[in-house]
Structure formats: structure tokens, C-alpha cells
Image 1 (cartoon, one colour):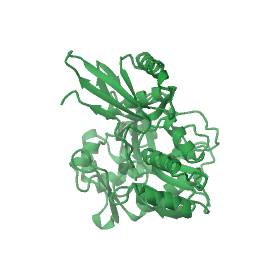
Image 2 (image 1 turned 180 degrees about the vertical axis):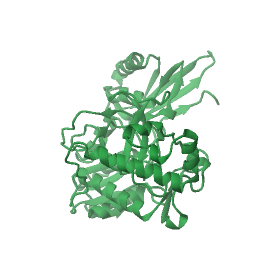
Image 3 (image 1 turned 90 degrees about the horizontal axis):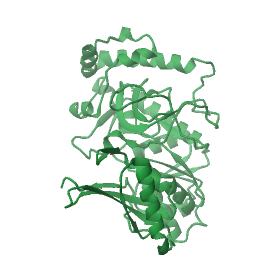
Image 4 (image 1 turned 30 degrees about the vertical axis):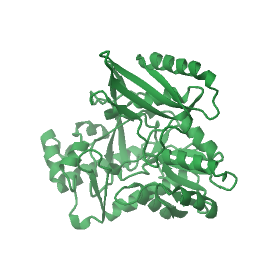
Length: 428
């Protein structure tokens, strides 16, 4: 059984997207007072959508709209049709709550099962799920897709390193699903306990945070060469499982039969050229309870227009660089943490864990310190060369000066959730 769509003829996907776009706009206009008011204000009626290019006439939706519409934002069906809700972490203000109909849940399960198929799993695989359950979309999403696909789910949740290691050995788990920070924790713990020859892991499906190439290599090495697959996802767009990095590891195939992806300049909101960095804006094509119309995700990536070596025709975007609202303004220069991450990935002598510390000092200037771990077994006599190389690369690529502090391997904190990378003390 395959969960991949069948668009054999030229124009099949575009025709499918146009039908889905027309349905979504009509469904939202008829069912949601919020969307009806927003579309009326933009002077757009459902009958005005005749081509995919007409999507440019549609108004944008933002995270503020979700918070302002709490507790049931964007609701476009009667509450009696809602079978589940999920919510974001809510680190700032009210949580972003999304509702689901039974069809929404089934569509999500199919999308997620497609992820497992793309990663090359079979029904003989045993999938250890190491992400959060509860109102979060992560744990239940990974499990839902695993069960729809037909592999064995081992639902552990995050943390519990003793249990994680025991289950890896006792149950012979072949796949783990987690954040990259949790994957690093598990890989280091497996090595520390001398379990490398007893673990049968073949694949790691990870998401929730940007991960450097250095961190990916370290995770893979610690888990016996396991292959890593980056999985995108957010609560607003069903949850994780809306695309996956394929076996060619040349970007992420996204499920364009379930949503339209635009890459726009985050300041002008105009399309960028294929291959240029911009903000992901998504419009769903079949979502019933809480459809998205040109939703600004704030995630930054680029489209990859060339055919993928893996042969799958579904379109691709690059791994996420970061978020447009995570931008650091430092000495009149806009910097994204992912740019520092990229520099460290190609720097010799440093590990995968780092922190960016910003502070305003008595000299009246802002200062940036990049604190990064040495590699295991590093020769301290190399420190000055390593620091100079990083300082030079940051200056060359970002046009700012930074200080570099090297710390011992394992000194920076690990987390089973997203790791905090930026510490801005300038306004304290």
C-alpha cells in the first residue's frame, strides 16, 4: 500500500490545488465569521477564485488572529463536528488552539503515514516515539501515523533516559522520533552506557528545531550510523508530518496535495525567486475545522525547484533556517541564529552545542559572544586557531564582529525538548 498521491499527467497537481483552493475559500467564507469579515474587507468572494494566481488576492492570516480568536480560532464548522483539539506550547500569551474534524484527523494520519513510507520504513519496524503527548500535536501525531502505516509504535514520550535506553535494547526499536536535542541526548547516553553494539536503530526522524550538519553527524555516529530525516510541522498546519526529508537528503518534500506553499519576502510579502530565502506562507486545501488561508508561519526556507535525485515528483523546500521573528538586530545588522549555526557546522574543532550571548557593556556598545563546545578529545593548543577561524567566518558572512568562547565537550546543557540558543541580556 502506498500513501503517495498519483499525479501522472502534467497539470494534475495544479488542477487538484485549484479545486482545493476554491473549496477552502468557499468553506471558510460560509462557515467562519472571521474569514467572511476578512474576505469581505479584501473585496474577495469565493466566486472570484478562478485560477491559482487569484490566491494573491486573498488576505493573510497570522498567529495574532489565532490568539485573538481564542479559544476556537478560525472555526469553520459547528462545534458538534469537532472531535479533537490541539494547542501550541503557548510560551508567549494565549496558546494557539486548533480544532479537528474526523476527516482532518484521517487526512493527518495519511500524511504522516506518507512520511514513514518516504523514510523507507516497513511494517517490521519498531518506532520509539520520544516526543511530548497531551495537547501537543507531536506525540499523538507520530503515533497516529505509525498506526496508520502499520509499524509497531513504542510510545515513551520525552525524557526518561533509563527507559529509553532499556526499550531500545529490549524491544529492538529500529526508529526513534524526537527533537534533535533529544536525539543528541539519547546518542550520548547510548555511548556512555556502552550500548552501541546492542542498539538496532536504523533511522532517526526528528523535528521541532533547526539542526546543524555537525549535530546531525554527531547524532548519527552515536547511534551506529543511523540515517536522519528532518520532519517539519506546526500545530496550525495539522501538526508534524506535512512533509519529510527524503533518502537523497536534498531538502524536504512537502505534501502539496494538502496545502499550497508560498515563499514570500517577510517585509514586502511579495514572492521571492525560486531558490531565494523567504517566509513560508501556507493555504490548506482540505482542512475542515480550522482551514488556513495564506497563513504566515514565520518559518524561513527556500524552494528547491530542480528535480530531486530520489525521483519523487512532489515539490521540495530546504531545511528551515529559522524564523523571521527570531531575527537578531545587532549593530544595525539583521542576523538569524541559523547563520551562526551554519558557520559552526563548517568549523573544525567544535561540537554541535552552542549558545549566542548578547549584552550591552559599559563601553556603550553591544557585544556578541558565541559559546561553543570543543569536540571530544580536543587539543587545547588548537583553541586560538579555532576561535580565529570562527571569528573570521562570522565577520566575512555576517559583517559583524563576535567573540568566541570555547568550553569543554558536554558543558552546555542538553534538553529533551527544544534547546535554548540565544540569550539576549541587552535590555535587562
